[in-house]
Length: 195
Image (tube, rainbow, N blue to C red; front, side, top):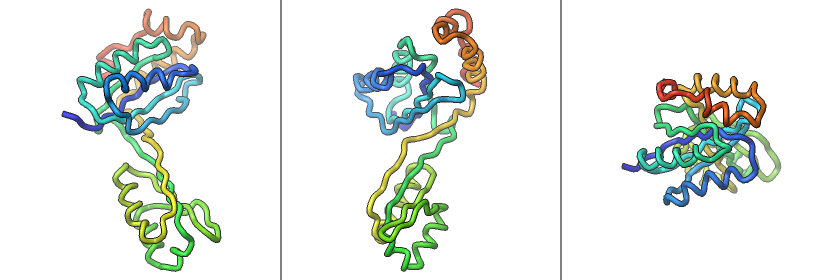
């Protein structure tokens, strides 16, 4: 059965790695609904957070393919309850809407905040889960919504502490030896992954 999963991929900083990862999903006919990436707390190690609708068995095969790439440290598939996540949305709205007292109440009720205000428009920011952000967009539409932009998912995995300790140990090594050390004598066990 298809449902939403979060895939986290820990990589080295290499040109073209995003394309090499995403093409694996494309070849299997899986559409990526969200992709974010940023450097982790460990210099030189990047974390991809990929959201997809798929079946878990299919994703586990894809993760295996991803891990075969030389620049990849590890990749994981997470169920919804295994991650803490948020998304961010920006809403550009006509300043005329502020003449209607109801919009200020709407902003407060939805825990949004005004980032910038000009004579023509103002920009609201809200963080939350995807449906909350979409719901706010619908509520703002009658007030003169000009533009809407949403980020991909940003997530923290609940059980990844041991893996992060492992990455920190690897960061003490020269970059050339990271992959060799990981798979030679410092590989994380399946038991550690499931904690």
